[in-house]
Length: 409
Ligand SMILES: Nc1ncnc2c1ncn2[C@@H]1O[C@H](COP(=O)(O)OP(=O)(O)O)[C@@H](O)[C@H]1O
Ligand SMILES: [Mg+2]
Image: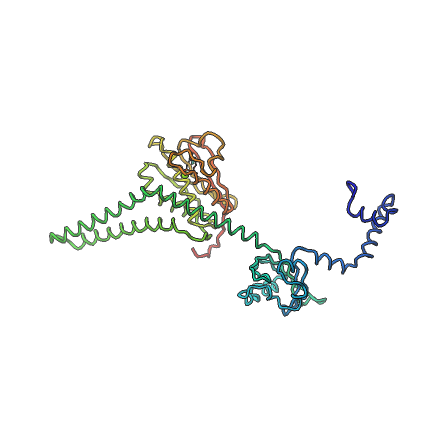
């Protein structure tokens, strides 16, 4: 084909060279139309297009019997048209999904006239498939539904890749959580020690009073109640640790961002005291929500908060301030973790997000790279900006989730 020539030109030229050039446009147009109608009737044309689609096009009658099965369907489901036509469409369902056909497919389709869904299906070999299924009603001349046209695209490979990526990300996040907890162990042991020491004091005091015989019930009761409260506090610390190391399937549910920040700050309460850092939090009002894996978001917050602490180690105690702010943006929730530390290391600010990049003798350099991958997996962004007054602000945004006021908590 000559440069600039279209397929129509060469088609035309090949068949009737004398008409290829020098003809008025209107004549050429009608020639092409004549050619088309002589070669393909509209019906034949439709049939060819249908056959050559990569998507599976399947038509079933009202009873679910297959009436049409194109080449795309042969390729995706493994049955030839000869084998499939006349069979029930349940042929390509997973056996356990057959009873769901009414509620999953027929009802929404009758209600809306068309329906799109992701559907699990079965290849002739028995292999599981995931398909994107677009359904519409086939109607007779008077508009009554007489069957279903289904177009399916095979998205099995894409889904498998998504799942694999999610699993890897979750595993990596879990390993990093264990590492973080390792770093926090001393602080946590210290924090746990306080309620335990208090319990020893209160119960020891009770025993001494009882032994001496000079006790009032009120006094004993108050001491026992206080010991109980301290035991709850210790249990709370352990619960936090247990949740944090749990290896769950990533699970996304509505999360109050204010609450997530408050919980992360409670987690580092002991460390905050030990490091003599002043911590403040400014929640957003009304409380914004997102949909997220709670443990993973807490993990990000802990990474950022602890990085802030570490950046302030060499700063005079009076100047150590960590301020966490939650803000509501345009369909987003933004969190800023601001410190008054030494500032970002020289070089592009992006380098700190590289895996294994660390400027700390004992550092692992995984915190920020994991945090970024968690935030991005949630459809958000994480970045760092130097603060004009010194120190650094680490910020992330997540998509906001608008809750109905009657949703349960
Ligand atoms: N708040 C901060 N202020 C200054 N530098 C920071 C801050 N947070 C992180 N960095 C820099 O980014 C590097 C990577 O951080 P991170 O991925 O959490 O790994 P690690 O904390 O193990 O070094 C740190 O070593 C430090 O140089
Ligand atoms: Mg870190």
